[in-house]
Image 1 (cartoon, one colour):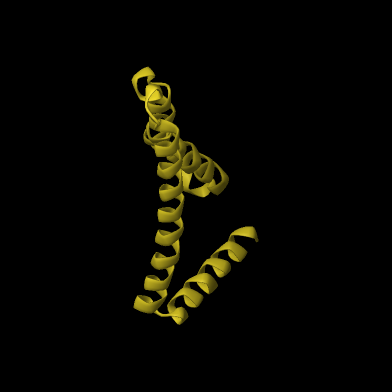
Image 2 (image 1 turned 90 degrees about the vertical axis):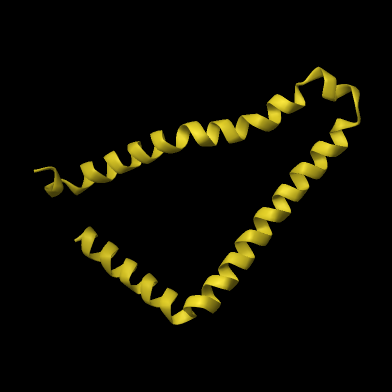
Length: 97
């Protein structure tokens, strides 16, 4: 049975995750370069707007990561995350044996 072949399952999970995320990540990653190549937008002061867009996107990602982490620790407690880390380490250690 396939469940007895853990390396195969890990490989299948990786391939499936890759295929599922390929289309949305490609679409999200291509929107800005496509916008930059628009000749109508090149006539305006679009470089400054793109710089602001990139900057605000980066700051938003940083703020989301920091606030999300702070909220998660406050909501669930540091001991919850330490317990989950210990569980994950134990599972990984057992899987290596």
